[in-house]
Image (cartoon, rainbow, N blue to C red; front, side, top):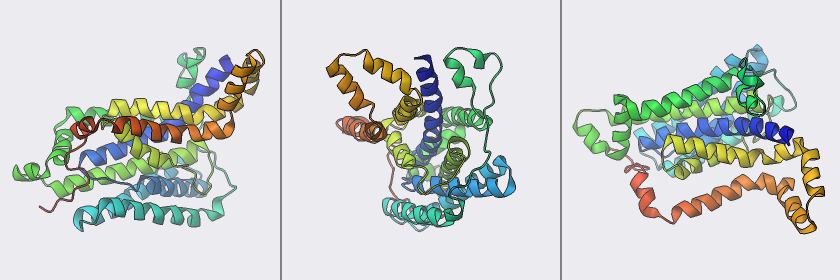
Length: 323
């Protein structure tokens, strides 16, 4: 059972980190009043570009830089369309995702089947030796830096004047403009920062999780990140909790396979009915579909209270500003 728990903890952290990064980027973007549905596409472009640069240069850090820059580039394009040209944010985000999904598959054809060294685990002395929980302290340097970045952004959003300005623009852009702030620049900055985090999330998937590239490698994580922001009702701490919850469900299949002997022992010592139920719940297809089913169920549960959603959602979310 210890092996099962150890594998599960390690897998949850790996699965949750891209969700936290992409979700935090989307949360910041939406806090400024911009709805970006292109997160999945930006993650795919970040993943393929970071893998390509890491493969050619031999440097994982250069790969991360490439992924972040590419994410920012597509976010800047999205911001130009929706903030400057005032195109529909939903339609533009969907179109961008369709474009980047195909483009990433085309650019990544030559990399399928190859692998990179990527980032290796960097255990923290003493803490990494703690039974079971020591897995938390055996992450890569990129994971540690990503955790620090998310914590900093959560603090920045609610404890600095610039964070207050971003939230003010999302709540009432006309009021922010009336007291002298440039709403367009704030929305540009928030969207590009969100794109950088999406690109970083893609780089994390290709250089830490899989250390390889394949078409659709993000597996819908970008879409879950968008849903996660609603699940968290636009609050960073609830977003981190939600990412760990979704990460737990995403990693159940891998953890069960890694600890197959332990699960088999449980099945052998269970009654026939319980054994059948447990056997169904540990089916690989059921486990793979679990996070997506949970997304639908949780969103339906949250949607029952529209007053709560309206109370927490940025008032100008999805609305163009023509100041």
